[in-house]
Length: 376
Length: 253
Image (cartoon, each protein chain N blue to C red):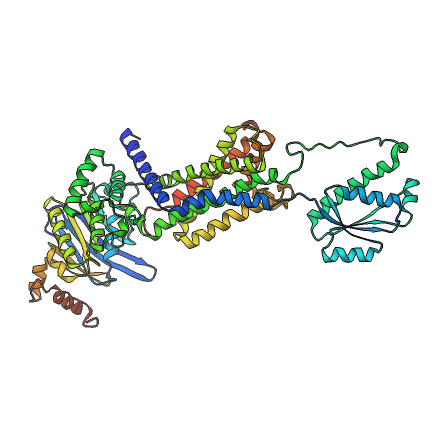
């Protein structure tokens, strides 16, 4: 490639990019969609979605009605996890409360509970509302732990220490806060949608208003059109990443513990892939309405369901786990959590970065090949 | 066919369909250097398809298209550097001003800053758009918009200019001005292909090709065609109707 050719190519790419910047500056809606929307959604989702299980309504069936049984109820409900919502002596009535949704768990202290405890054979029955499996599992674990602690207190020093003890310490997110877990996933999810949507719209608009015909009558090449159109949106996308991470740190105390290089590289590759996907959609559909629908579906669903943002990848059925490897949001979520929470760098996250590179290259190649410089 | 010594454009037995619609059915024509060639015909005759094939925006199903000695639809063609196109639709960027549109297309054609300054001044002068440089393209009148499209297509001094119904929706005064402008370009040695549904505009061309239902039913100088049919060249509509009637055996008259 001689220098004049290269100079002209760069000139045409910059001309395309400059024109796009003018469009963006004149269309406040695009800027709003690109910058304000992800931040707004992050705030709404960040505060709105929480997997923290606390203040659970507990129905208590105390058939023993002794000082010890009352003390156990007091100890269980003294924590923030459970709130005493109903108290009585009939298990049937308690289950009715469960059915009505007035309680998520029932704790039954049977007749003779105090005497059984004194003999070292006390039993407490826990009934959980399995309609919400996630809450039931967490509530059961919390209730078991609380009853276990109370039981030890009642036994005092009379019971010998167990021969094996597990000491659990949760690293990276010791308090198990949902925000720390959610914000990185949410950032990837929102960026995926906005990046795909904006690109799909901007190129489809060019087809719809006929300006592609005028462009094709000039020496501008298809790769120059593609790169020139993507550059401004890549800049906006990187600004989005900065904004989302800043808001995440400011409002949700999300830290940045790892390599900024890995973070920047991951964000860049992820955005190029997403912008390429949007471009491919618009090249195929050539219509803003169809492009919007395809872009939303193809970015939103995989980013939410198969990225590990909400549902752990390990819990997916094996075929979906394999498919999730093709979803760039999965690799970006891993990168974000790795850098932000686990303090990872390139040495750990390189497989994710390679996957993001491959996806970006695939999208740009497909979009450019499919982008015929003709109207047929 | 043409007596012009050098052919800038040629179509040889070109056929092009869009699904079941046969837009061009074996059209052959040639346009010589410095000619004003009019593609005349009613709506749906195949004029836009012919112009798009010449510009390399479409590939023929059959036949051969040559523009400045090359296949204009070839991915690596250099034809576009010598070609200007004014499409039928409003294809400029409506939210960009007159100046921003000019600047954008100048950069795509690789004009230097100095060259652009000179060309801009000249084109704004001949199109009389100088007072509207800051106005958005979508706020221009129909005539002014066409002039801007023409100015954008002329920035790089093309050898061939293709105009697809440039006077469509333009008031009579602007139409006259536009044709005066085109003649200025012809005097500078440019080759022009102008498609038009207006029969009176045929008389302004050196040669015309009459397209009807995808077929070239006649070709020649407007005076020559008028003489053959015993009417004045200014009454080209009568020539066209007579030719259509002869071609269809009176079915379309």
